[in-house]
Length: 206
Image 1 (cartoon, one colour):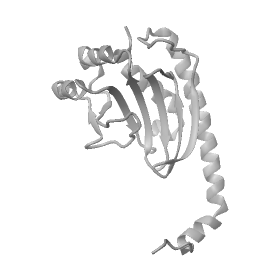
Image 2: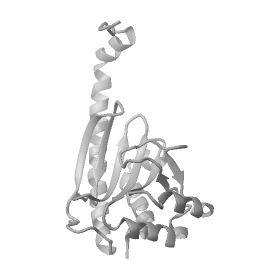
Image 3: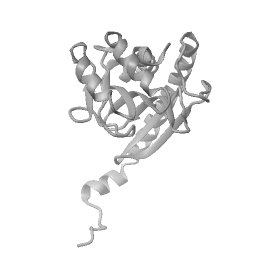
């Protein structure tokens, strides 16, 4: 049977709710400004650290993206630092996923991965216990969290983390924040992102 083209009563109410769409547009604009401020804050912090970056890395490159269909939900994100080139990925993404949460993620693939894994394990206790999780997904582009998707990086889990990263061709470390988190709700997304990036630096600094 083909799906009905008729609108349900709930759908009709939503389509008619002009105020909902105005609020959505206003929130989108506010998130954009937060991400722009996040870029400026990260950019100000970057000169103070020495990153182990892949060939061709340019610290001036960033990207702001807005879309509607991350598993049917709107999303906005900042990539900075940003490097996707020649099979190498070295990117920090601040993603606002409507209906879900804010995700700060370090995406690593290609050149340097072996060394990043060594840094993760060699500096493990600098990284553990700071709210970070290791993605278990086979791709960098899975954004769900929880059992089967992410594994918390805790001080007593070094052996499990070592086993997880051993043969993986990529590494993704994330921290998620609910929209009720006081720093997110009060507009301190730049602080959230900078503190998360700082907690991940032992993996990617010399």
